[in-house]
Length: 317
Image 1 (spheres, rainbow, N blue to C red):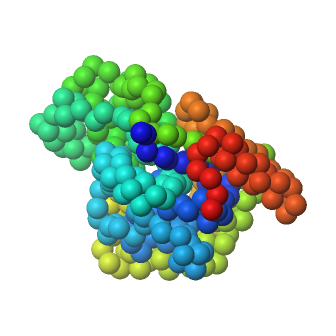
Image 2: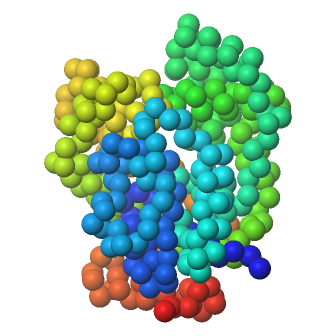
């Protein structure tokens, strides 16, 4: 029999965390973070990491697992998630992946294969040397020329993953985007996927308010603390949205107001890319969370619960 797996996905700030807690409470669930940033210790505010008191006793995994100097890859996430899903199923509970990193989630739901044939350490070292002399902008432009889709997905500062995408093309003759599209679309799980969406203007307003709240909660102090520990912008984790902009502010390159606006703009663009990625994934059942009136929101949630039970996925206790 296939193992159960529920996935809750959608753009940042749409309301995934709240829904995941309620579903986990009703359906004996345990939550796996499908976010590429919440795995790092000390990076709480900028990643909108769930607070312990918000977990309401629900087990959460892949949060605060590594120091920010760890290079967390999709292949590592896939391996760990597959193992954790089995463990949760063996307990008779429902594994729930929650997050917004589309590639990470799809690597698990649709069994991506990460081939060693696409690795060439010598070429990778050549690119790293080339980067030293030509800069990250020129490196990103190389990728843009051969694989515009990956270039759009990868930030200019994410040089390790840019180099990886160039390495894949060098060794296989295919772009990373082409390889991902060729991967099988079947799943090895008894899988249900819930997608949350929202009117774009309202979502952007929520994003802007969330960024303001992050500043109020101490994002600047969080970034300064990380810098004091030796984690600067050369670390992959510190290239995340919110961190790299505050670093620019702390280095006197932009004002705080400019940094805040940069974070809001980058987060809005990220949400747009998330939606584009999720729209390309098959099998997602979408629910619109635009209406924030409590009674209407509860009706939508009830529809979700009924839909899950109707699919004989896992009955409520």
